[in-house]
Image (cartoon, rainbow, N blue to C red; front, side, top):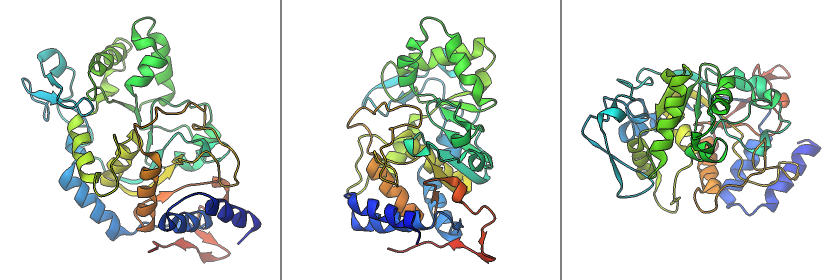
Length: 335
């Protein structure tokens, strides 16, 4: 154990974590240099359970196939509220999900946590077959977060705060999309009353600028099914975060998953203060999401060998999976 490892272990001990989570996190931190391999049996079990309950390949996005003309969309945020599926809405939907046949060998799910600052993880992230990002994060930190994106969410909140509900100039919004290249944009427009109009304006804007074929609406049926699957025991968040939702999507689509930028603490591994996001320190609305509880779930998945969580600096990673002539593999742990 290096001096830095000892510091990190002492820092973790200072945090008020359940004993099980602390043990897993210490193992995770101390094995960051090791080559990690998933437990294929555990991954297959999660994949099968999630396909049975939630089936992201069919339900993740609203399509003509799963959202018939004349039906109703039940909002997952405003309980009891419905939207009628009329022809103007229905005509905006793709015939079927673009994810119907998607399977990936290696996926990077990139959160926006401040722990990505000075991580030098960009090159490692860009090696993934599928890179998922959230809420149009700034991409001018390529050394830390990479440049590749295949899928990115566009939350109605950012359309309101950053782009003034798209009621004035729309070009700044389109300019913000361009760094993502050919990525698909997923808009969760059917959670709360009023969000659907924002989503339509975003899609119409993209259509006007030749980007409509890359815009999709998240289907609230998927969110509802996923919430029902996870809300058990003491895990009762008001709403699952976008990050948690797409980690679960990746569990259905990917053989190997690494999380980057998922970190619910205000201090890093060296006990240094870090911002909430790698690009700003804007705090979330309190009481909506349960980030520490979700992180505990990720730690549990890591312990089972289902996914990996990248922390600290990626330059310490032994990308060949070997160290000192010996293969150095992180095995699942059973705390």
